[in-house]
Length: 545
Ligand SMILES: *[C@@H]1O[C@H](CO)[C@@H](O)[C@H](O)[C@H]1NC(C)=O
Image (cartoon, rainbow, N blue to C red; front, side, top):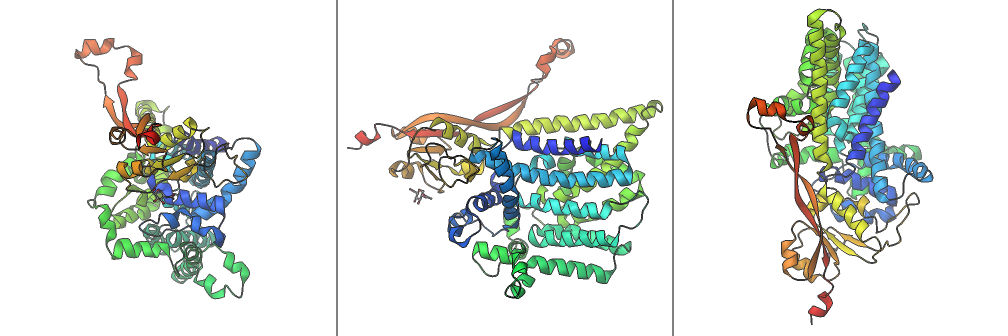
């Protein structure tokens, strides 16, 4: 039974990766960093080829997650290629994402274990069903967002704190130490907002006497210092092994070629101190509670409230994440991914509520009604998830366009294609540059591998027409190109535009006559042309004279 529950968690995370293999702009820094580490290694000679040196973003970000992910993926890719499962660069991208998904699924499996132990198996099962039927977290857990790197150590910390016998008051000393060391490491290296979950958890641990103040400071300080890498730079000369520890300042200063660089601190300086985060837009104070949480949690939100009402262990579990969201609500700029770490906490609470609803299904009318209501909530989760997944699958026109392009011209030599901004942001990642080096032994280079993929921004159709090396473009509109007489439209690529509701009309009697299969198309997905593949017209050479 435990095995099946874990398998369900893993299968869900893999399904989302396989259904929507392409990526978006938010993921691209870490995805490309992983690509570069896989392809070039981290030796000094190849650093200039790294994508962040060619296209630097607004703020430096940490490489640590990407390096670890690349190192984990390498052997997996090797084995997969031996079994014939991996041949193109896109396969490698999928492998990278599956490894990350597996890692995060492992975090959820551990929490599942803790839930089974503390609240019993039925609650563990409800936890798994609620987690798998949600959309956001399963969809994102295999995507290289910095927050998804942070999620794994946060979940490990969560597991360390809550994996104990049903009525036990105290976690062991060692697991409290481990939990706070992990959370500190995550806040320092990956995502500073984790500090705002760490703080309420620390206050609670102090109030409940799970840890003494001095010990907490010591653990936090040691973990922070180690993570910052001050230790490392001080002792680098004396101890070669210490130098190898993956610590943020050392690693990131090296890769960004700035000394010293601590990306998360710089991020706080840039976003909070200089107030730049407001440039990304501000939301009202209640946005997390009233808009983001309901979307992230779906049916788990009401169930979590129920769980907290029923069980004081659940209440104790919920204070820190709720306080953490309240603290984050004070910052103007809000995004769902800043609060993603609280979702497992809420799902545990919701599982407790759901168990109460399903446990008395044989005990009279009330029990039967609550059982049906719980099943209804799960079914509603599934419907929302299926609809959202369907839309997301069609929402990566850049990835589809480049994949189509690669296929269509597979035999051509020396193609030079310009990739528009929208295409680059919606899936045309470095992993899709299949006809151009670099290659590693795990993947087979195609017969034609001398193409140039160019994603230089703000080149107008005129620039692109005048710039003769370009043989093809993937553009956001075709009219301006075709108008010049130099380009031929080859294909257009559709992307998700909106959902359309086709409600049957004409009164109750008519509606009742509507055949069953027609009800399936009540919700219809509309797509529109978003990208165009154009080829330089053949007469181009002769026309010019
Ligand atoms: C992309 O094309 C532009 C315009 O021709 C050129 O200036 C730029 O150097 C090219 N970039 C790469 C990476 O080839």
